[in-house]
Each structure stands twice: as structure tokens, then as C-alpha cells.
Image (tube, rainbow, N blue to C red; front, side, top):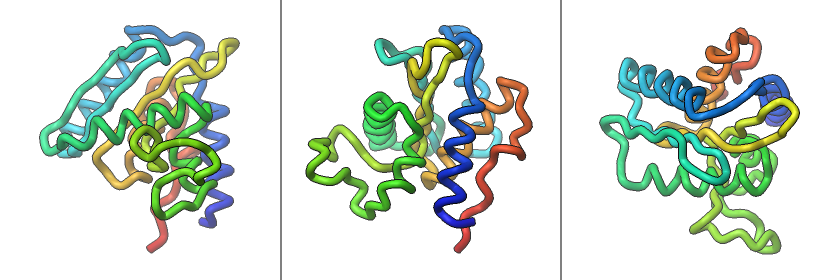
Length: 167
């Protein structure tokens, strides 16, 4: 699948994966589902779910490391700034250094082009927060979040899943 096709599918994910409401209980259910999947699959990730004003859920799996929370923090900042998924930003920007262009004024210490941050969008309110996963290759981090949102919202994951990356 071409990059343009991936970007179009991610835009579709962002349009479809919208909550009727989002609160602490929803964050806990989604975070717990990601945690359960990570434990079952031995995925060395952290998951950080928050609205833009406060954290709602955090978990670190065995095998995750001290850099994962920082990667998640920088992904969260990207979603907060651009209101779109970080993997979409990666594909749109095509920057192998993981940094935004100098003219953007976004320091690599606070903003990173890396997949795994996904906007929490509420119908009628817009983007109010972010779900970030860090620890796997970025396409997989993104996929973990999308799968959890599909499951929670009752949407067929196959319809929205990115295909495996061509090697």
C-alpha cells in the first residue's frame, strides 16, 4: 500500500473512531483493554491516556523501558498541537530525523514524529485528548490503539486496520 493510501486510511480512522462521550471510566476500559492485550502478547509497551488537562490512565508493561514515557509525552504533545494521529504526521512529514522542520519551532525534546499517539475525539466537542502507546515499532503502536478503539466502539477492526508494512 502506498503512503498516500495509508494516510487516507488513517484520516478515515480519525473520522470514524469518535466517542459519544469520554470520561475516566471510558479511559480505564480502553487502557485496561490495551494492558490486557499487551500482557497476553508480551508487548513491552506503556499506555498513557489523557485529556488535554490531566492524565486518566497509565500502565507500563514488562519489558518497557525508561525512554517509553518520554516518547509518549512527545507524541501527546504532537496530538495536542495538530489534533491528528502521530503516525499520520510521520507519513505526511517524511522526516527520517523524527524532528519537525526548523520553521515549525517545535523542539525534538518536546515533539517527535513517531507513531502511537491517537486523538480522543468526542462527537460535538472535537479532539479533547490523546491515547499514546510506546514500545513497539510505530506502525504497531498505532495499530494497538486503533484496535482498542474499534473494539470499544463496536467497529470492525479489519475495516480500518492498516495492512502489514511492505518490507
